[in-house]
Length: 276
Image 1 (cartoon, rainbow, N blue to C red):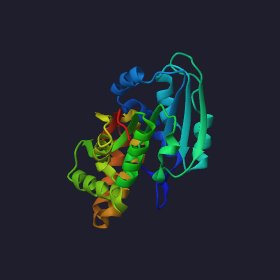
Image 2 (image 1 turned 135 degrees about the vertical axis):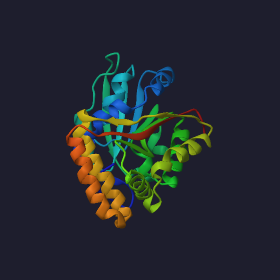
Image 3 (image 1 turned 60 degrees about the vertical axis):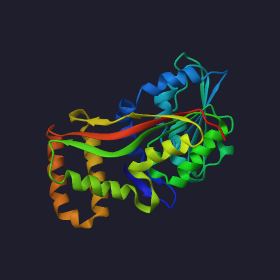
Image 4 (image 1 turned 135 degrees about the horizontal axis):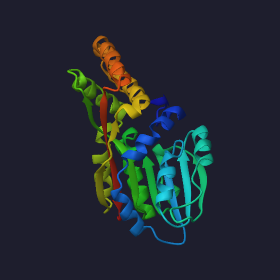
C-alpha cells in the first residue's frame, strides 16, 4: 500500500494510487464468497456498508455482481474520496435493480454497533491490515451486533514473490512486514486476528487467497508498488538504504523491459453468522 498521509488513527490514501490499483484489485478478489452471499442476502433491499470506501472500488466491483435493489453506505474520513466514490458508484445491480448511495464521514477506528444498524452486509477492501487488534475487535463486535456478514478483501498476507529472484528480496520483505506492524497495526497478522475475533462471536469464517499477479501489462502499478514497498522497508531498516537503491534501480529497469513479474499475496475473509 502507498498512503498519501497518515494520522494517529488510519492512513489516508492518494486517489491516483487507488485508481491505479483498482484493476488489479478487481482481478484479485476471490469469487468463492459471491455464491455464499447471493444465497444469504435476500430481502426487499440490501443495505451494504463499505468501510474505508476510498474512491468506491469495492462498490463498483460488488454491486453489479449482486442481484436486487441495493443501498450502499460509504464510510470514509476523507471527504474528497467520499465525493469521488459517490460520483462513480454503480446505479444498477446484477439484475438491473436500482443501486442508491449515501456517504458518511467518520473515524473507522472507533466503529460502534449503532453505525451498522440495519446492515445486510459489511464490506471493506485493503482495510484490515491498517487496523489495530482493538479496531478489529470493535469491527467484529459491530457486525455481530448488526447480525450481518462481513466480506473483508485484499488484506496483505506478508508474502511477495518476485521473478527473477534477488538475494535482497527476503530482507526487504521482512523489513516491509515490520513496517506494516508499526504502532500496533496488524499488517500481515490482520486476517488471523480478524478470523479469531469474528469466530469469537460465533461466526463461520472462510479465508480465500486474492493475490495480485503483476506482469508487463501492469507495469505502471508494479513500478509504483515497488517504490512504496522498498521505501517502507528502508524507512524501517535504514541500513538497507545503499543496497536498496541499487536494487530498486535494477528492478525498475526490469519492469520497464517487461522482464519482471510480481505476485503480492493478499487474503479475503468472509464471516457469516454469529451474534452478540
